[in-house]
Amino acid sequence: MTAEERIHQSEVFIALANELFDAGSNMAGAEMLYGALTQVIIAIAVRRQENYREHQHRRHVMRRLATELDDPDITDAFGTSQRLHVHFYLNDLTDDCFQAAAATTRGLINRLLPLSA
Image 1 (cartoon, helix red, strand yellow):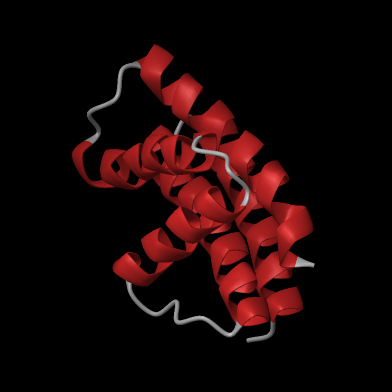
Image 2 (cartoon, rainbow, N blue to C red; image 1 turned 30 degrees about the horizontal axis):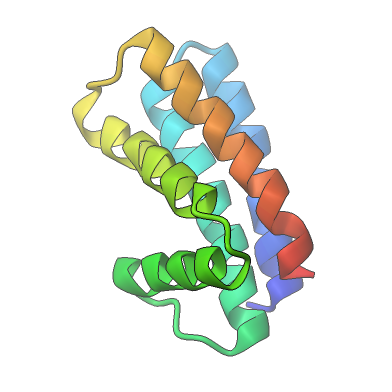
């Protein structure tokens, strides 16, 4: 998939996440929102011709971006966003923590989108 296709897939996942949240399925919605973020990270990696196949590769992309932009909030936000992925499996976030993680993830997606273009 191209970077543009990854961005489109991210938009599809965001729409699915919203539908799932509206239906009361926070676990599945959390995974879709995390997946949307992952697609943006992969788009950035594709543009930069970096490896992205494994979790460690995507974490590396995020660490590199944080260093290049001198913005440690990027890695902090990514760590928070990863809690949504874990929540899909464990259903372990309180409502407040879930809402905060979802908001952080949406903000990170918006922060990264210009870097994927």
